[in-house]
Length: 337
Length: 249
Image 1: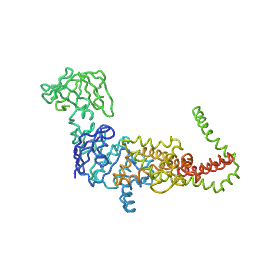
Image 2 (image 1 turned 120 degrees about the horizontal axis):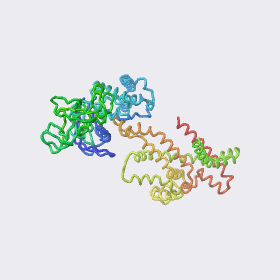
Image 3 (image 1 turned 60 degrees about the vertical axis):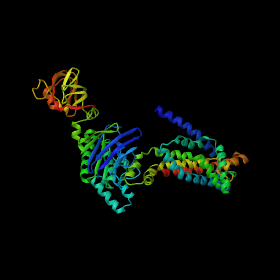
Image 4 (image 1 turned 90 degrees about the vertical axis):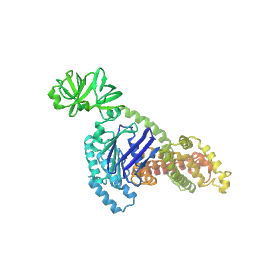
């Protein structure tokens, strides 16, 4: 049965959710992504039944077992690793031998067998996380809820954790609802994502689709679009600072257009091609990133362009150089607000 | 180095201020008098009564104070500040005044006494009541602060794992505030033992140790009051050190 969140609103301790509607399919890996303070944890706690919404309802949750993994794992400090994992089983008054064998089995799967008698305070971040997952898995949940589970980890462990989540999802066939502020993480995990900003889900869909078609400036900003321009459009042209941008819609009193930094080509000579937007300008700034360079070109407006390190070196780009920037009309995204 | 020296010096002043009168009193009593005093039935029964009455008060405070502390730490409601102020009040008001206030509720002419026909004034129960009133803030506040330090999400996690609210409280929250409960109980119990003002108004007899010390001082002078005092301090010290060691383990 699908999980249906219908028109949920809630105000709680400075956070607010406004009219949230979501349908999450059984077995789906759904990621709610949004900046911190957007109310992500609140949604999870409402789904888990830990908080009553002010209005609205959650359907398809009754009698479902929930595995809730909080950001800082919430391992019970007065219990050791074994007792933590066994907690949900002890509550269910399961036979002691059965508990022992189940906990051992889970520990084996999550590679924490040697930690079972350890005090939880002395575990590393990654170990704590695996213990928390084992504790949740012990009750065989129908739905896993993950509250920013990777934010306390270093980059390396974060990558490993993502792999583990994908495997876990495949093995358990449970529904996964995961919240994060990291869009990249959402991209690598999700079947579908929902973008939560200021207490509203403002876009929902497959990750690639959302990434390529943001529906508002807010979303484009959140997704890291650096080239977003607003203005009125006439005859397929958006005029900003005397620059005529050819855009895919004919007319609008006001609209935003956005283009991804890696959809722009830069060249020393003007390129003769089907791409209809071509502008000449000076390089104002260059930022070195891990595998790419971000070049800021002033063509009347500042355009941020990502190029590979190889092209950067081959073109022998320097600050103050004058270059052409070219992009297709079809790579421009247009939205009204 | 200078920092450490100055801080140690200031701390030492405080220790001396407390330590000197106690040590002086102790060395002014010779051990044989002390031993003799401890064999007086009036003395040992009064010390035992004092400890016992304070234990009753602490037990009742645990049963009612822990739930109250939990609510005060976890919930927001109208009038919460008033309740917190009320809990702090017994620390501030003169304890003789506290005794008089208690007398209006539990005294011979009180509604309670008339309705039940029971007179508790001058009994061990009234001693416990006086001790409870003046010392319960120490327990409630210590346990409240303990609960406040514990992230609510521990309980929420327990609930998602299948625990009821009660189960989550008893298996997660309560064990996590164990230290606060122990030290709060100790503080309350200790404060109960030392109580004089409220106790003497509710029960001159049976005589608790502080009342006995007062009586001997009044009737026979300093010389007779000191051995009882030293005995009470020594026993309290031993009990406290023992519990602190036990608590660390």
